[in-house]
Length: 194
Image (cartoon, rainbow, N blue to C red):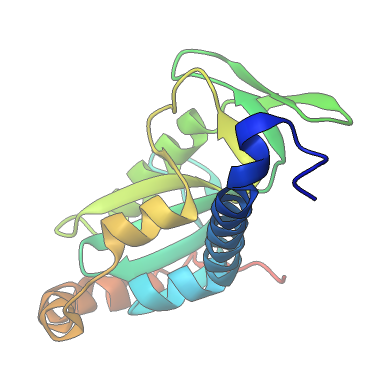
């Protein structure tokens, strides 16, 4: 085989093969780790309790639907999931965000204002508990021009709201639990069928 490769490359082909094998192994390992991290597994890690698909009164008037309301050791967390594949062009000030993939291009309304409304509605119910919200883009979405506020990936969600020390997290949860239960007793609350 050395006769087929010119000069010094022929002598170093075993080293090149080893380097390529290490690169491929690293990519496979990275892919397996990312694939193993699912929305369900991250929720299991960060949530002490949760409810999906609820409708509650809006802060001003009417009702508002919440996709996922999660009790974490940091307070209540509202998660809106976006399953898009491709490059997302969006910012805090843009009214519409655009997704461009290999096969299509589409736009959707900036989800931030609706998330702010959801946060305000939940804060109205549980005044003493911190309430935050995240727009979760699952694997397959990339932001090339910077990531807008409140947008995160599964990994970032897990890092921000996951607890290394579950026992310490449970102590915090005990302070939030009465407010969480009060939120679940709101007369207008109803669960949207999946």
